[in-house]
Image 1 (cartoon, rainbow, N blue to C red):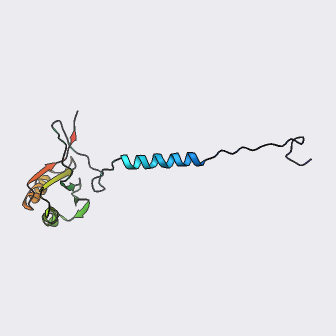
Image 2: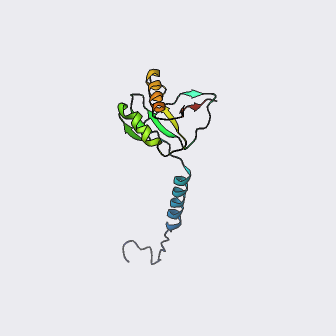
Image 3: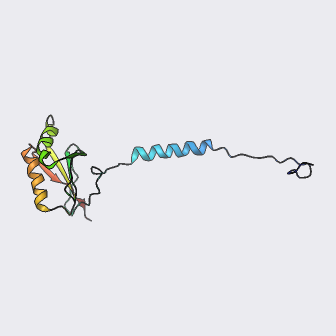
Length: 136
């Protein structure tokens, strides 16, 4: 008798077929990737101010992001402060809707916020809005 055999009986090994499980995991992964929106403001952790009267913003607006340490981004591309007006002007060319959505951290200095809004208006933006969180 060989080692590992029990009195001449043959043991049948059963295997679990993993293919359907792997297929299901991939289907779920694709579903969640397709239905989840990943909105991250220019790779910054922005803590937006809150407002009870907040309204939904237009998706076609140019996004200007102002971080808590003064970082500036136009459509997720970093911009130096002295180049903001030119970048916004270039980005608004060819767009019939001259809208800018300013995404700013709640801890940003008010003077800095007003300066960015002013630069956007000088660049030709007709409508400049500030992104906020809706307070319930």
